[in-house]
Image (cartoon, rainbow, N blue to C red):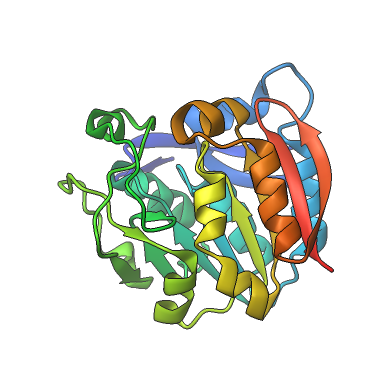
Length: 251
């Protein structure tokens, strides 16, 4: 079966012998042949599944091409999902995966980077390749309603910036769970979520990319752990593959 929007083939894909979704071929293959063999981020996915309740509001920060976002939406099927992804060129793929799996669209979508209001190294060509080594920075955010995933701003050449705290205020969606895979900008994203962490106390899942965190943003995993400790959270290290996967629970 094909989906005209993604212009690719979709396959029933078994994820870690536990969940089945229809995914485009280029995404399905990573679950068929995960790096190093075995299962794909097994500990992280199992912990998120055990934490997320059907009625939860989940923020997926760094939706990438949407397969994990769709899986999260299927778990929070009576709640709400807010999808955040700065690369406008992958949003058609996200929409296609939701459509193919008959999932309710996200309660809100944000085409932008959720971080502190700081100047961040840029590489606009990286957007077009779909691989990031920095985030363009500008002053205002773009928030789109779920209806139809209408934005599809593929011509966009600048990516807006907004903090998590501002996004929560604008959408009115208060998170029960934050999941985050942001390729090195973990500390910046969390620093922009301090009010949300203090007031609403969501469970937080963070995948820390140590090399990108250090080389691109001048931070270390210890900085992330210190920030979460100051926010009143206890961290549990779930696993390490190409990233270190952590779960943070409010004390």
